[in-house]
Image 1 (cartoon, rainbow, N blue to C red):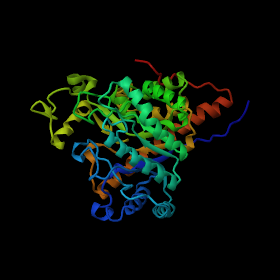
Image 2 (image 1 turned 90 degrees about the horizontal axis):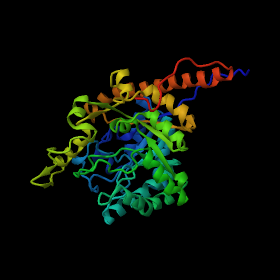
Image 3 (image 1 turned 120 degrees about the vertical axis):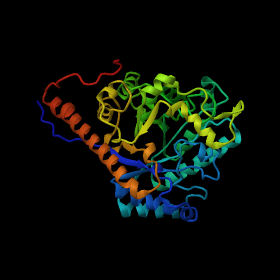
Length: 413
């Protein structure tokens, strides 16, 4: 018999800076772009986050998707219209040191398989700037989407991935970076009837894409930044997804987490099913896609008719909803990650992503206590899961003590 010390291991709590797009007013940050990062780092310390996921994006004047058409407007906290130099990096690193706040990864969420060569090249070139900024900041990962060529079938998109996305991973490899893919299907990204506009939306596609990466010598650069809100959207549950990855030999694929929930509206599902609203949305006018970006926003009824984003801690504790996969069971999420995935827990990012509609406000004072509460909730939830895991799987296991009960089981309906 061995006596094992009780040593719970917790994840790195971080927050995506898109939580407030305009923390620094644009008339200030456009002329002094790194001030936006400095002020976000200071704000992260105020709300209790030890790290940030630094959001970058094409400037609103340069993007091909108008902000008015986006369900959740992106944030170019990291403004890369001008090159990110060593001097700029030194300024950001000084702010990090002053406030004792780290950067878990950089985020740039865009369609990297866009069918238009000119638009795709623009996004590719911008991603290169993100990669270079990550290298200068000493950050080891960039988080984003794969996207989809909307002119092609899903099988054809595998070839598009091989031709267009693998070179991005080769560039990441040259810089010692990992690319972590968030699995949002992005159903409202366009006015078509396509639901899956990001081909890396579930474990089956992740594995197919990773096999392509392995053959190209960039398997270590392709990882998943798992977000349980998207699993809820597609009728999946976290424990079963993690079990499937383990059973398939791919428990290593997940390298980080967004903690953002999704609360299913049973009435919306009853009306439209999990495919979302398919007609009379208002994004088509006179038999063709509306030229008005505000009308194009209605394409997101493919998603929001049946669910609403949750900021962790803002939805009711609802065990029945957990069992029906209609909201995220955060405690089991953190337990399952430890029990089923290949993770270095202490180095794993747990990034709070705020897209809860009633609190999508640009008033930092109003939002401060809301984000403080959510960050505290997820930190304490992770600490509780860490404690239970260490007690059962390490302390008790070392002394040969059996664990009571069955727990939540994967694949069970």
